[in-house]
Length: 298
Image 1 (spheres, rainbow, N blue to C red):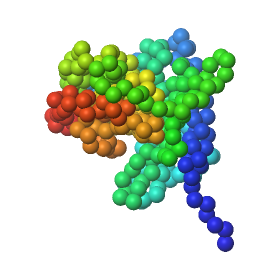
Image 2: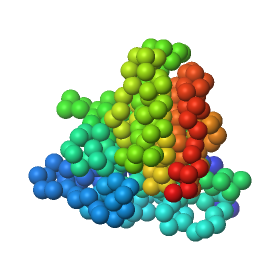
Image 3: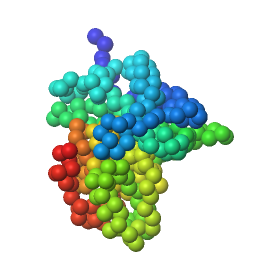
Image 4: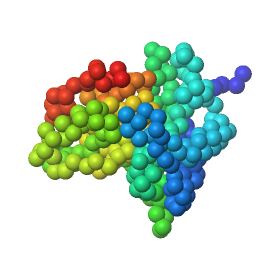
């Protein structure tokens, strides 16, 4: 009888590398569309009171391409968005994200990504991402991480490819730190981010606002930023959050909700990631602006 070989962290790393190759291919198609002079998208009039919505044909292209190709390289139990209501321990689902940073993409900025995350249901029947891949085509950057195998940043340039182990900064105080934050274009949801940023004025060395969430998380993981926070990330942000989360975890950074609780993979979240050294100082500011039930129930 043939023995079943136990999966190793290197097996997961190899799987992440294969899927990263597919994501880079999909990203090149998306980059080509971004550089095309035709209009990329028009704001939708649906839910106009909650701000503009963009419908991108490239999102459909990415989904079709990744769904078809990823099935050829590894066994899994389906895709996150079409999984059954109940899942069993050990089952795995890929979550392929749409363009993360859609406004940056439409405005032809470079800070946007395509993402993929592999969720696994644990013994407690709760899902947890175990592979995360974040690819920024216009920047030539790919971040990937797999459970127990660490995190890697791949930078492709005109003179070749450079691979680095991803590790966070060693900044130990909020004074002198560099923070990043994100916020919604919906006023009632973005106010908390602005309130926190205002209360921090004069403390960090700098506060950045670039986005998207997946790239901001990776930049905490690699030490570009010392921390990142954003309120009211929605369920449609889960793909980007999950992919970036694995990179942060494997780099030995920290990530949680603003109140210190774990991220909920089926609900809206407020998210804070850090190098692990300044999180207590930062949470002092975040917890002055708690989660608003009136917003979360919208």
